[in-house]
Image (cartoon, rainbow, N blue to C red; front, side, top):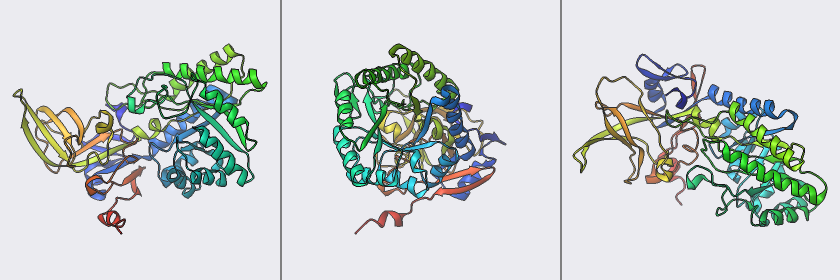
Length: 439
């Protein structure tokens, strides 16, 4: 199961440890549920993607943009800046985090399918490097805001290459019937090209494509790149100059289950480089500057969630079989992915080993919903009891970032561990925080 945990997780003296700190001490010091992030692992992954991009594309390497939607807070934004990579934000709130972290504006890319006038204006005001435009309305908004600030704003057009990526429908983003981007097949992409070129306040730098999330096969990435590059060829033929940039997005899958094979930077980038070079040769283009957007692939495996067991209940099924329901002190408010689109996780008994037989179990949350299930089917020791600790790996991406206050449950903290020391980087919410919004 090593591939589902961060590099700092070990199992010593019958107990899970992170950076040498045992699970029982982590629970005692910080409570549960809590997200624990391995800072060394996070930084190593961020640097690995940057190094692989540079090695594969050389002087044609653009930016690795960390996708902030996976998880970002002020401290993590500082780590990203220190690793020398960029930050992709898709709301005014994420941009506010970047600003609070003094993140270099030139390395910020602004995304999203419905950027408000205020969000676009703020981005241009602070001098973000790139805005990824998603509609004709946004082209006009960017042009107007740039004109007011006396600037020329660099943009990429987000294009829909018409690909059915092998992932869940809710996180597939490149087929035609989707809210994101301009369709290449319908001609909407070319209409957007002409619209962008009609505004002197806009510098069209290139195209952007993103085919989805948690993708474990590389084939669709090559097809997407080819369709984007083909349109770059049309642009060159029409206007006599080549667009200089291409952002191939992210979506590289990680291991949630022991049998999952993650997409690693040392495999992804050489593959992308070969695909880009082949397509550029086909259409007679120079290789553009290539950027990518790993988010989940950096933070996902770097974090786990620690829960305390509250109750257990043996349920006799219609078939006559038994299932042990194990209720934890978190649930769908800190990990909505299983309920939202059937995401699968594993868990381990973190505070001790057990010689009890394994039995059919279901790990459920404390919320007033039948669908509040973190792990639907798993074999766990029969003697798991109230007070035991369960650790769920690979929760760095979209756990805390999609967390809610359903049933008025305060959201968990995020605690970073580095060289045997732990510190809170995002505090636990309190009931006072929840009541503070009432008027």
